[in-house]
Image (cartoon, rainbow, N blue to C red; front, side, top):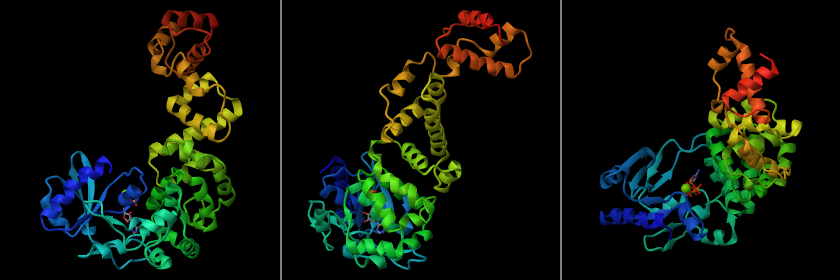
Length: 394
Ligand code: ATP
Ligand code: MG
C-alpha cells in the first residue's frame, strides 16, 4: 500500500470513531488492485458534508452541495465524498443536484465503470458488488448497469471509457463499445472543458495508439472539437509513438502538426486551452516548419529558445525525423541565448553612430546577434564596436 493510503487511514479512523462508515473508493482502489501508482485517493463516507467539515481541522469546501469536501492531512489532499446517488440527469449531463444516501452500495452503483465501483475498507477488504475485480483481471472496461442508460445519463462517460483504455491498456467490452457507437452524438451536450480533460489524459496514456482507432470506430471523433472532419488525419495518429512526448504542449503540437490546421490558434482556443499552451504550440509548429524548410541553424535555435528546441526535438523524433546531432545540445553551445546577454546596449549604438533612435537600432541588434551566433565576432563591447565599424554598416 503506498504512502498516501497509509496517510489516508487516519481520515477513515476519525470518521469511524465518530460513528460514520468510510471506505476507499474509485480510481485509487482500481489502481491499487492494478499495482499502479495513484494520483488522488477518494474516500466515500456516510457523514454529511457539514459533519466532515466539523470533524477535520483543515478542509476545503469544493462542492459540498455535491457532497465533496477536501480534507487536508499530513501535507496531502483527500477528497471525502458523502455516499450519494445522482438523479435528475438533465440533457445528458451530470446532474445538477445529488441525493445523499446511507448505503455504500447505492453510491457504488452510480459510478461509471465496474473497475471504478469497488470499495476497500481500512483493513484492505474489498467490497465489489459489480464484479469490478473480474473486469480488472480481464482488462475490460464495462459500465455499471446498462451502458446505453449510463451514457445517456452522462455522455462524458463515453470519453472516459476511451481514455481509460488508453491509460490502462484495457479493452472496451462489446456492449459498452456498441453503446458508445449508438450514443456518440450525445457528446455534443458536454462542455468542451470536460472533453479536453479526458482527451489530454487519452493523449498521454501508454496505449493511446490503440485508443485513436476506437475514437474513429465509435465515431466519437465526430463530436470532439476540431476533430469532426479529420478522419484522414486521425487515421495517421496510431503510427506515432506518442508516449515519447512529455509535456501537454508537445501532445497538442503533434496533434496540430498531424492535422495541419490552417487556423491553428482558433483550433487550439476551441479546446479552451490556456494561452500559455496555445502560444507554446504555435511556436513549436512554426519551428517544425522552419526546420523542414531550412534545417536547424544557430539563428533558429536562438529564436526558438531552450523549451521550444527541446520540445521540437522530441516531436521530430516521434515523427521519424530524429537527427544525429541533438538540437538541444547545439542550443547549449550557442555563445548567447538571449538579447539581454549582449555586451552592448542601445545607448552604445546611439553613441557610436551618433544618430536619432530608429528602426536601425533593432536591425543592428539583429546584425550583432547574427555576428556572434556565426562566430564572426565575440560578445565583447570593444570587439563588437571594431567589428561593426569594419563592416561599415549602420
Ligand atoms: P483518475 O483520477 O486516475 O483520472 P479516476 O477513476 O479516479 O481516474 P476521477 O475522475 O478521479 O477518476 O473520479 C473518481 C471516481 O468517481 C471514479 O473512479 C468513478 O467511480 C467516479 N466517477 C467519476 N466521474 C464519473 C462519471 N462521469 N460518472 C460516474 N462516475 C464517475
Ligand atoms: Mg481520481
